[in-house]
Image 1 (cartoon, rainbow, N blue to C red):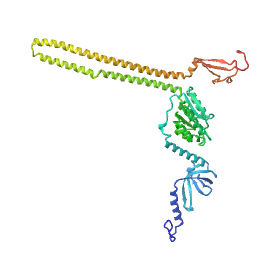
Image 2: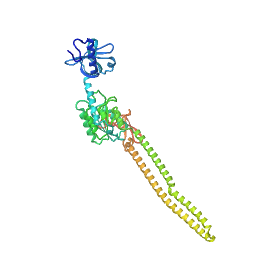
Image 3: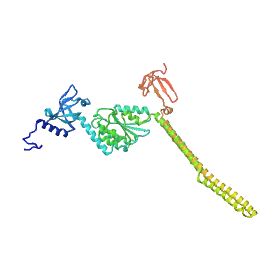
Length: 457
């Protein structure tokens, strides 16, 4: 009787032959695989190697993880823990046992989340939601900035602090939304859709750092499609620099942190001032280049072919006169002299008339070109001057000093803090009042709705 390997009873396998035959067929069949199960019989050897079993309700398999792989674990494996591992099947011939050589291990929940993340990432990439051609540029100087985040988190405080410090004239429109937990993704998507229709120049979507579960709302497909569909440029600022979410990949710009997002949205007053100065310098250099170009064109016109034609024409006339003189020498002296004088008069008049005519025509052309050049130069300088003045006026209107010049004042206490309401001071406190041109000191001598005290002690 012959079996599937062409072997008969008269020539049986040895144990080692069978074991190595199983090894040769089993190990190549499972070079790398993912396996889920519950840890049991966990043992950590003094060498750092891990020995344990993976089991489910019907079966188990022994597993080994060498120290080099175990050192990179971000979890502490223990009995009863549900895990997903990656490894290869190994047959140990001396004992006739097969086991799993593990090189990666993750908790069951984390593994599912990462697998879902990779599936959604691949799907949206294939649909083109990450493509660079869909990314929108951020505005130069936004007047209204929309923020979708938790109203109580550290992210909104960081964004407000940075924007107000860099350019206080920006209007912030905040949409409060949950950033983790059940329903958070729907609230974030609704916030994006709402602020996209409110005339904002740019939107910031994000939150502070957290675990992968905490940030999961920003990996939901609803948030990704809301970002992609928005007409307003969007900055994603989720977690810390090492955290990457689906929202980061779809957004027009990714910021490392919420504070970084605020810095990307608004430059400082000094940066805008330097930019305007550079633009002014660039305009001046452009005008200089254009002026030199016009000057070269004028010089080239002076050497135009019309001038060369006049010069050649005069030379031709001179040669004709020489020929006439030679021919007249062979005629009667009197007749020749008479004709000669007449020809000389005609030649002189011809040269003079032609020169005057040509000169006047060229002089008229030069006058017209000069007028055109003057008009273009004046219009260009006037246009550049108006644009620079308009930029300077807009910057000055946004200056805090302009507010003070309209009659407002800022009140500071002795600690240098701004006094915003009555409860910030008490009777007798010294105050510093900052006006547009100077400051003055004052003392609190009376408070509204309080016991009246004499104005002067």
